[in-house]
Image (cartoon, rainbow, N blue to C red):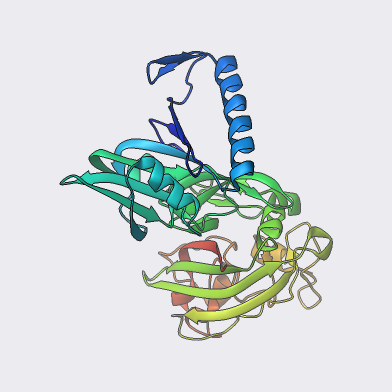
Length: 357
């Protein structure tokens, strides 16, 4: 998670141990006045886990594990403030509070403050310095970006897929980003399957991961767009899910929630549509005698070949061109309606997902 100055807090109802150490950057590190080599640390940790498991089984008490940063707090995701006599008491209350993912502990005028948070810090850059304060967050694996405060890379564990590095944007998981012509989006089926590009820059997440992600819960999808004429638009669907590769990653569920485009043209047309690429015939057009991707580039859930298409050939925003030229470009027809003029061409777009529950 990129959090520095780590402490581990092991909690039970009436017995707590705090073991401080820094992240290992070499084979030997020093913390809390105690030297640990990796083997000694591992043996100590195994002993501690075994002891706590036996203890808490007897006491029937939940315990959890937290990573911490000294002299810092997370100010932006407060659930509630509670009374706590120590960091141990604060840790216990977070552990036993549903949806608590982190907590701050600090003193003001000899009053001990325990603040429970609903989010975790993606990295230490978003923490605020607070002398004497301590910020802790649980060390559970994430399934998406829902409980993450901040923007940047994060490893998540997707059910039925495994671990994947994704880009989180304040609770949203970015699955596609595009903003210039330096990244080629006219790619093969296999490239769209596994994903391509750099999630910090321009990229496609990968359809196999996208399938697993959208089937481990109910997800909303948000598309943010910047048109060639400099206007910002968005569309949000409160349900988005795709099928597996055997079913051509077809859109299984799609439900429109909100938008600021001037029309709803094509906003539901991808529902039930298979994904198509230049080397796949899923989106073959008898009228064109070729696939939509062959004619217009990119990979997409093609309904009509010339409607909304975020991975089409990148447009030259300095040249309005004629209507035939605009048909094969990166665009979103709902911005202007069926008569897609210069205003529906896009210079940038992102696609994001967020779990509903």
